[in-house]
Length: 340
Image (cartoon, rainbow, N blue to C red; front, side, top):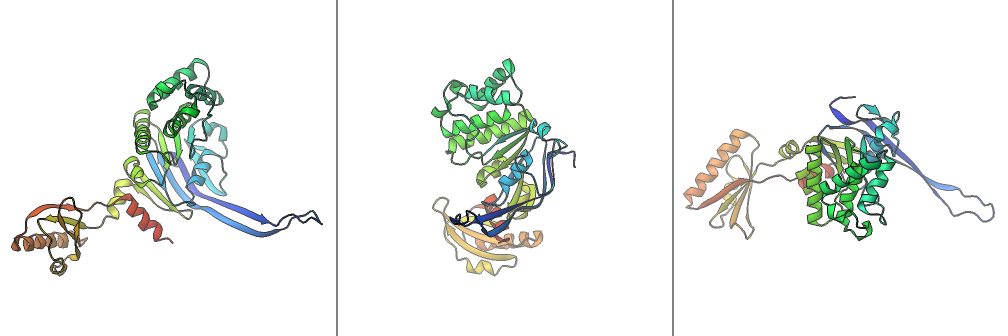
């Protein structure tokens, strides 16, 4: 167990056994199974969430993300390995651990639609041993924090999906837990609601000091939101590192050179250090020469100098030169496709 982590998974595994049955035999009244399946949902996964950090767990459908969240929250028992929350073994201290965890499941299944947001918070606060004036005061503060103060007394059934999702985050925070688990918090939301939730997640992490684990399919949100990214595929953790480092490691040395007219890319391919050259026209900034150059710093520098010298000798006007940025989506596809 590492004290720097608020949540730690140590060599976690989860195996499910399933059986499929024939229709009941009318004569004997018995069923006999005809197929057994063993599903290895999570395989020796090991990572931690630091205090005051947002960790994103990404992966295709069925990769094991939600299973990891459920094992952390105590909803599913691991087949092997250990899960620690605030230094406590989840299996041995389940009730104590639950006081430190707030969970937002995918969708809005954690809210009660006939009640108002304030009534929801009072109800779930009572279940978490937060009662009386304290739960009402904290509930109003959370609704104000999340931007639902004016909807405090409106039935949940009359709220938009984005507002219900924000209420679900308030419910997760009502007992003031140190660890927040968000399972697909922005699924199905419009751009404005998704952005509002993202901003509030950052705010509660930075200002309230929460440790947050987010599972999501939205690569753009993960790239903007998360301090570190873990990518899981077929139950195995492929990588877990800082978002900036992950993008830098997989960044291609590709440069975009915008010009006044379209050049012939073929001569540039013969320049030492240039691995490939192509021209593109995006309709916004004019013609563009796209170069993929060597990873070696000295070779790359010499190649770019020679490219610029050739452009100058051809009398072309150099408008801009920029390095093409890698995206988390591209990194994700490269890593997951390599494991297929």
